[in-house]
Image 1 (cartoon, rainbow over the protein chains, first blue to last red):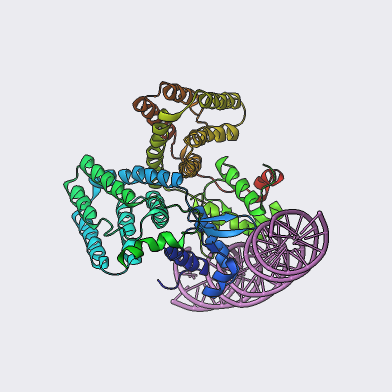
Image 2: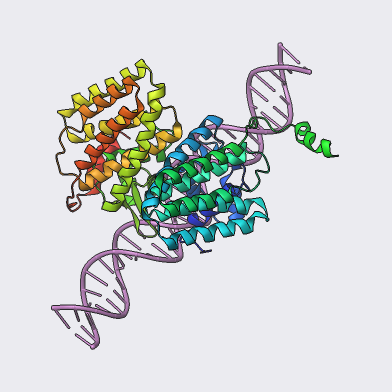
Length: 228
Length: 228
DNA sequence: GATGTCAAGATCGTATACGATACTATTGTA
DNA sequence: TACAATAGTATCGTATACGATCTTGACATC
């Protein structure tokens, strides 16, 4: 598990996780040399990983100018959320017809982990929230669907990093439980509606923050000045 | 257009086209050396291209065993078509709200090309049929949607190569015209239904066929290397 | 005849090297 | 002081080299 098949894979997964957990923020440069040094591999492997991340839209690569964590525009962000609703509707639609009790238990176990992580730091709970949706996709048994959902969930994490306010609170653990209930009932209409509502809520927690210029120190401190 | 920014890009597009036009058939091995020789570049650039194609599901890469044109199973094929319906429903849904008369004309011009290509050889008309759907996605103005549709249309071409009978006849030019009509009317229900019917028909033309044994990869690529 | 073993060849993963391109900071000039 | 030219640095694109892994076929053994 720790040791991937190839070093490129290892780099790929590490960078991916770092981006999803928002350790690497949108717009941050990703120089091949620096990454290679850090992981103790050559640029070759790093390049390989960056190409893959670029293919799934997590990093931008501009010829001769290097790679950087992608910075979706607000317009793209809305598109991606719209696409996500489309795909996850498909997921729950399929699951309503096929899901078993043991799979439902698996989902509940995952949510239990999410609850446990709520108290701890943000990155973990953010990742778990995303993985819940990926788990849903996996239960459909459709590999292409898993790939698309994984990809789009990652990109949504990126978007939340860009546009959400610092503390979005509990990331919809309750809503995940509601979703499980709906799936257990097996009614596609209800399940899709709950999913729709959940994704709407996730998106709603996002708020426009001007991503363009470096945040002005006064605006950052204004919030703290109040409590001083 | 002919000269890409980087050689990797050139290889990527050439291989992609070769796969979509079914010059490279599913299961065919893609040795880095042979491809590099044919295009006059080193393995480095070829690898880069193969990684990208792997990311979009057109080629399989197994560690230390090389790359090969992907061979979707029948089950995966059905999944992909199902996903395609899901995505393209989204496309026509959006277009009904936004499409302009000049864009409709653009679509009609494309279909005209398709009609012209009907008499000529198969590869061209097959590619144009796919590009019609990509053009539809582009008209939504949503880059992510374009990416997903492009990707999935490519994979459908692959699937048709695997499972369709040799001559599928005219690849739904009439249906494309019907779709344009529906879009012009601007009624989402009708348009989605027409799209659904069209994609169902495309899928229906698919039938299992035994993928024969392999011709030499160099002779196939000699034609593609020229235009790279 | 079937199966296991092993060596030779093919192919890949990765490191390194070199030329090319883009960025940066300094200097000179208006 | 403001701006343009330029040199220097950083970073990338690509080629090549070497060790590692896999495949293939021959041969020995059961």
